[in-house]
Image (tube, rainbow, N blue to C red; front, top):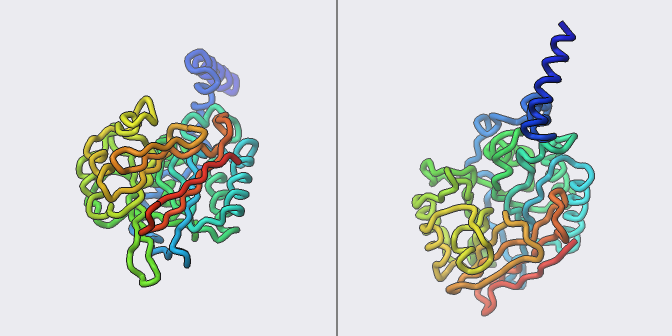
Length: 321
């Protein structure tokens, strides 16, 4: 019996290797991986969790440190370096808020690596932000959804439940719109009046098409505002920042060009340095890739300082670790 089992496994491995190389062989065993949070989002759904207005500094500014595309597989090797350098950047900048614009963990491509433990990577992030009592927010990327750990709803619900420092929500006025998280974070002045909105928009729509209803949800929340999302839409191609787009949907591009949308900042494309262009009054930005796992050169981040009411609303500092 044992011999038959061994022969069967050998045949399966041979087929997998011939059909898909090492990736094909490893992917066979992923349903049996130990760390799995599938179904977590159904047990602990996100509904307006952790979102309260954040105050501007005494000088009227607000500082955001944007990371993107960490692609964490575990807490070893390149990922240990990513986490270490992120933490050093947080200690140096001391931002009011850290924003990660998607692909926190690596998706199915991680199966080509050994010792895959995405749950440990998420816990390492939680611990890092806890050590600094650092507020942070995220929008999900395609890798956060397409993986064997759990759906993007599971990942975001896990973070919301176990991380005291995360600012993340699924707004209660979405009325069934696709995506795991969409929410607005108001920045308030000394009179507790909203001076600026930070909008976190989930671009993980069905067939990569952002529905008109999603764009309609943005309209009453978006002004004045900075928008963070993961994918580039067609307008990023139009302004010369990308040669392809990750999500389709002209409806949202019309919203992004509204006169009171100051900045749209994304990830997904793995650029270094940060790319930025202004088009019809809106600044479009692709943040510098932040993870070492995918072999990207000179990863780092970008510091965004917002000064509501000032002639120059934004200042930027792009840096490699």
